[in-house]
Length: 288
Image 1 (tube, helix red, strand yellow):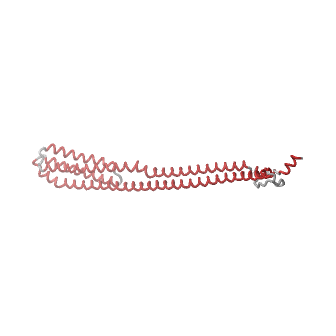
Image 2 (spheres, helix red, strand yellow):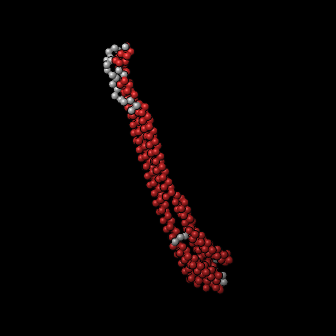
Image 3 (tube, helix red, strand yellow):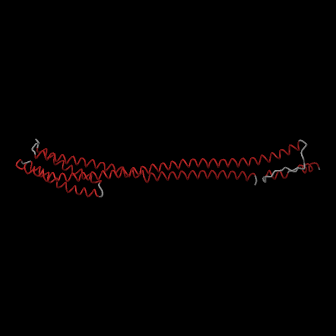
């Protein structure tokens, strides 16, 4: 193999090594990118786009239900004020009573927009109970406006009206509990997705650390092989030149053996040159 071929081989080997290192780095970066993309798509994105808005909506619905429950109590208090004739302004109390009834209807309707599954059946039950309660409490209030009808108003208020109120409130509590159970379930799902995202990120970081270590090992081995190859080639060249220089110095000192050939065992240009040099023949040609 010629010196040119050896040097060409080293250069090609270095380029191949560089290509391998670049390919390895690209593969690792692509693997990390895929892992992080999976974490975003499977875990973090659903939390941001689905779970958090759902939690906010359900929390808002619970707030509406609590306000509706308060309005129902306010309507009950107005009813009791009227049948007990304890309110100074009967018309204002009756107006407040009616307003609170409508607020119960409106707020529960808004809250029902986030209901699903069996909770919708609960809301249907609430609607029926609400209509019964609204009819009974309005009847008690209407009769309470007429002093001669107060006895009948009190019977309705303390009888069918309060029974309808209690039944309706029980259903409101069940709807609230259904919302809370759904919130707890969603929070558990968010926690699980967050844990998966944490594990995925941690695995990606560990893989990145391992990739860096492996990259450094491969690069170090490659650099070592490259340097070793260059060193061997340089030693081959310098050794051959050293042998030739030694023979020339022997001849120049007058003590060299002209019959000896230059012994260079390599098969490159230096080996061929050393084999072609025979000082006795050279001197004979010069002298004769």
